[in-house]
Length: 465
Ligand code: PA5
Image (cartoon, rainbow, N blue to C red; front, side, top):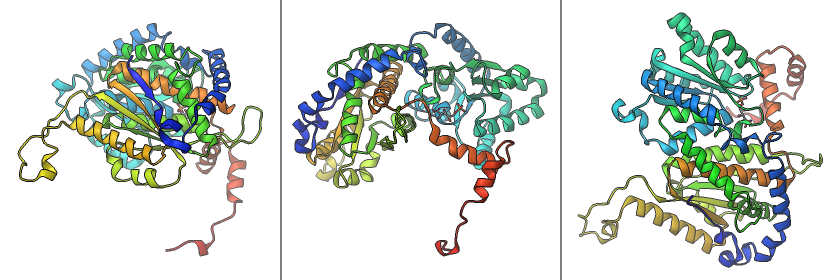
């Protein structure tokens, strides 16, 4: 495993008085070890079934591979319909590991179906999808653990209606349901309609489910080696068995973020320097925000915990957000993801000798430019006392992506334990869902509708036309 975590630039050693001192870090060792103990004690229990994902899936992996190989031979497109934890992982892993313009490649280079993730209910997007796919040559993977999410179930209803009108009884061959084995409506529909199904283990929550069938089936369909993804996760898990900060990278990062939060750094920026890792930042934003943003702790005390995640992309955001990171408030921790070896490279050709200010670029490769720009940005931020650390991936392949996802999941779990909050629920999401149900006339939500009706109406003086 070559995933290295370098946190020099979080420490006084690099940041001067704005950094964390060795003594401060040491003073948090007991808290870190207790978080480690809690997470290990919960392994495979409660909602920590995701910690078993790297180990206990050999049977389902076999089935996934055989389903994927059938789909790869027979279909032109594969569409994931889901939202939140049921969509961000498949999108992130696909973008990380496949050709950047995969869908535009000719079939003989793609070797599998085109791939789409539709994680919203924007009608224009749904209709646009229907413009570019042939539903009769498409498999739709409906992913919802609860089997009840309005957005996903609405997408399902639209698609099944189209499929049935075109294909009649053969519609079922175009749907795969990934859902809970015995909870929610999708499983009941799947059983009555005869859809192929994959199960999301009860102890694995949405945002921790990428290494379950939620992510493994879509990945296998586009030709990603899911055994290597799981192996990467397994090897990272091995590193996380240590309770020592110096050996366990996820525990070290969680502790540094914990200290930073206590010191007023309420924003966590993730900035990969690789386009293919752009959606890893999206996936992480959900993981970090939905897991740690909690009103009360496990004792019921109001804590309003959490750190706001921000997604950025190097080098692109050097020309936008980095100004703020350098000169704005000292309220951020920046996570850089650096890639040592890109899959391909481009050399900047010679031929501009007459303009020395351009010519210095000639002969370098784009990967050199990317990496040096990261080093330069990081140097400049550090010089200005801006907290940052780097996760260095040797390469962007299945093994390292599996390891990276698992590292970030472990970091989040430790962080939840240190904050003494439940990292696996999302009560803050429920209020909005209930209000939406009421507005759309769902039975049982009449009181909610009354409450909404009696809320203070907008007044004209605050509206500008
Ligand atoms: O992390 C979570 O639990 C959420 O983001 C869910 O994944 C999201 O709300 C979708 O839920 P479901 O898979 O039940 O449709």
